[in-house]
Length: 242
Image (cartoon, rainbow, N blue to C red; front, side):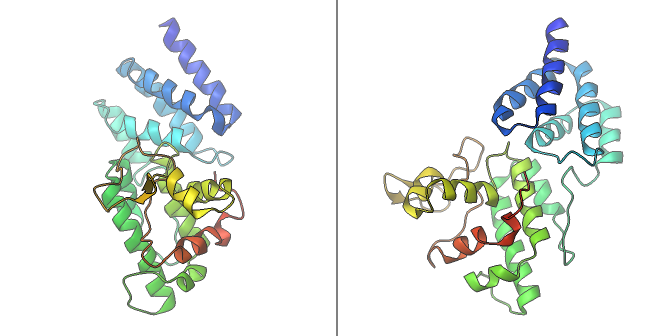
């Protein structure tokens, strides 16, 4: 019990520091605490709800992991509290044009990353169709500038929060910038190329969190890099959303 209390206090301390460099340690502690027994689940629920309802805190992948673990709890009281307080998850599903992001949230929580990737592409096309008044089932780079900041941030946040911080558009952008915007280095770093050969869809991509950071979501490169470059240049990323 002393070890459990120590782990819990350590987790609270690390969360208060709000340091991304501590992410792996925080994730490990959450798993240790959850697996210590059902009596720890209420403690994690308390942490999750206090952070969720604190306007000064932006939920992150640690909250995502706690939420996903608690969804597996067999405790009826915890299940009831989750349904009552977090019926649509922990990421605010904001949209400027009333797009429903709940199905994407459900797929990501369930770790159905391939289906979530397909839906992400559909949602971005839907945004482009509604705002650009066209019926195309794909994106041109010229479509990207009209995509709402709010919607792109919602999609990105969902991917980040429910992938232990590994996936998302802003994660990919950060990696791309770290390569001095070198596309070939970028493809290799995120695992879209292996031994200088482009991966074949879908069998050669990794659809779980063992993938390299930035591996998902995918974007079809048959039309070159213009769509992804336009996404990385979008004003949604001017201000930090982490």
